[in-house]
Image 1: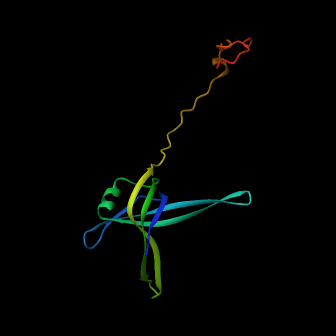
Image 2: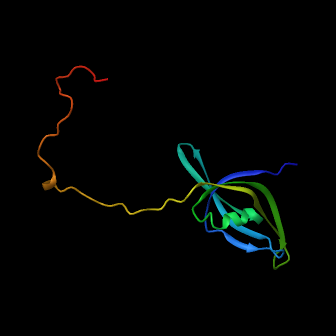
Image 3: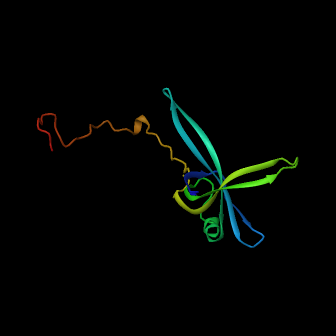
Amino acid sequence: MLNKVIIIGRLVKDPLERYMPSGTRMVEFTIAYNRRYMVGEVWKEESHFFEVKAYGKLAESLVNRISKGYTVVIEGRLTQDRWMDKEGKGQSKIRIVAESVRVINKPRIEEPVEEFSLREEEMSEEPIETPFSSEDDEIPF
């Protein structure tokens, strides 16, 4: 059977680094995928959140390479974690186990825009010269 996932999403928070009891490094993070679709003439959007885990060398390479806001392409497989809650009820959660992660876009850093305005007294009254006169009938190209 085939178990393959390819998804593009944006990290919603910085990755969390952990170590397994065996000493294997693990990184966990959550990505958001936004699906846009039309209903009639109105655009709708629904957000989906997926938990992702990476292990070993991949986890090591991701720790200082990705953070909140990065857009990534994840190739991996689905896994189902199962456990019993405090009331003894069976619970489960589907997660993505990453086999490769590729950064395709870093977060935009909003730099302050320098505001400026021209006051009327700073504007020139002189006409602006153009290389063409209104008498030219031919198109210059």
